[in-house]
Length: 324
View 1: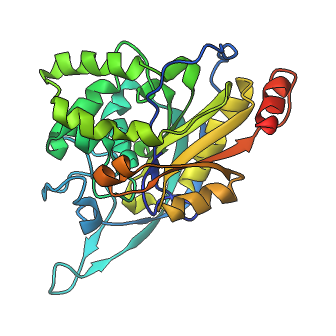
View 2 (view 1 turned 90 degrees about the vertical axis):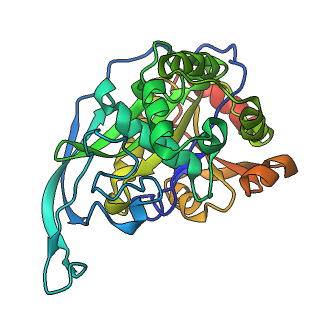
């Protein structure tokens, strides 16, 4: 469900995320070694890092990139030239930049924190992390950065993300995983670890409000490859970056023997839904609940699904998916 708004790089890429269910019993196929890095040459429009569209995730006026905690490296500082008598009059520069698709590393944790926060906010005023953490952005980002590097892996852990870098700077990311490996109660245990590291105590009232999301969580078939936590820095959207990340994430799921891939969106995030439908996903389920809507201001969630090409390892699971 975690998908950021107006972001599907090919048309509308919005953040997408949320899995907090008991772990399933089906064991997915063993992991395979990662593929080599992908590199692309692409023209990008560069804009000011202090653009007003970034201020919601980072109100600091000092020029740091959206969503990064103070003192953290800037993931992609765009070029800008000011001219004329008024400082706000700007010339947008075009340049050719190298785009590389890489596996997320621990040093990407600050950027993964921003992606996780943006993805869950989606097109909403407040998202899951806003309610459960109930803190200023810089504190939430610091917590999510620690959460991305906990000892126990989970569905917000950096290890399940792929990242698009422009000239070595992270600008877009998404995650892909099996619920049997990274879903269930793993996040609860990882949050306890992160709370201890940052000295945080969970407010039970904030927790209760946030967890109304359980009423609209998507349901996945066994052996489903889940794609979520999708977000791109505003100034790098509509450049095809998520298309490339999606292709890499789906290829990983195919190699792992997944039967289908699922991605979920909050109802109302129409640009993201349209973009995923263009990528071969189709809506298969919708969940609504008044308790969730009362807190989040959104009716619920939609789950989109696309099958993988049949292989000896996933044919049985695909037949079950078709019957359902």
